[in-house]
Length: 152
Ligand code: RB5
Image 1: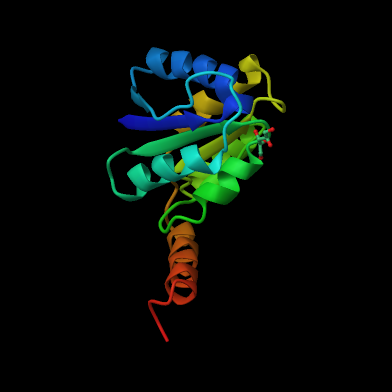
Image 2 (image 1 turned 45 degrees about the vertical axis):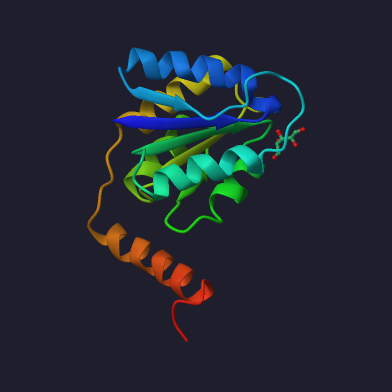
């Protein structure tokens, strides 16, 4: 399992905490930045994370900004990405079981390190339930195809 992770300045400190959680889970991690708390623009980090997941270069992605919102909006622009902004372990579990979320977005100004630990661990360890949920994910892909101009 390989996870690609990225943050802006607003998520930099929580990203460090999350990398420690991933190390405990013995997950391979690639960090695309940022590398300090100097102000940067979150789409510049959401894009490489989303592209690497969409291309199969990483199994999952994790993005951290102040709220998780800007990162999730950006990541979800990339075809094949199902990014969920999560602030509680229940939503973390459901985003995997029902939505097969392949990118997790967190807000450093929303969740503390302890809660983020539980969210990330739950999200990493929960499998997709498939079944009826497959049909719904296919319908999301259909929206991407139509909106992306793949179909008339
Ligand atoms: C940066 O101030 C902040 O806007 C960003 O981290 C994020 O919260 C945006 O959604």
